[in-house]
Image (cartoon, rainbow, N blue to C red):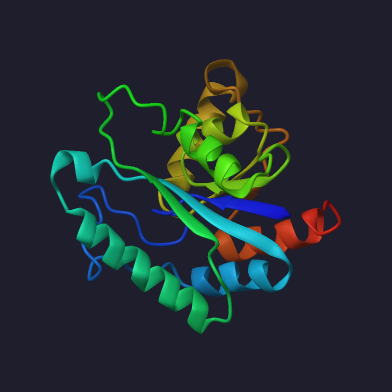
Length: 193
């Protein structure tokens, strides 16, 4: 199985500092559904791993989250692709859970569900915590500049990367968006079955 793990907000859909709270507010980044379909058509199992603390904070209900994910699934299918799963952490930052990124619980849940190791799999995120969660399980982090990506890149550049975050800028692939990241993944990971 060729596994690809994607963050959601800021990678697939437009992020909001006010939280994405409904299907109406869930707006895909241009080309992201097509990028997921492109990965799928090239033999990748595409899975989303996303923090959704808006549930714990009471900003939206589970029905709202499911409506957002239904909208995403329909868009990906319309582009000719398929999402193998969407895993989410419903907890707030003070809940002490193990599934909220930068913890690696969501990735471990993916491994258990699909009976696969995530080690070596590309993980695409727009935040440092996404990349850290992937690194904890041996994933290969990829940063996109959409969402919080540009801010994350600037933080890594000012910190020098590795010291505080464990992320090396010298080896971190960085792309404008999911479309260009998907092209890179297809080119570099297609042989790694």
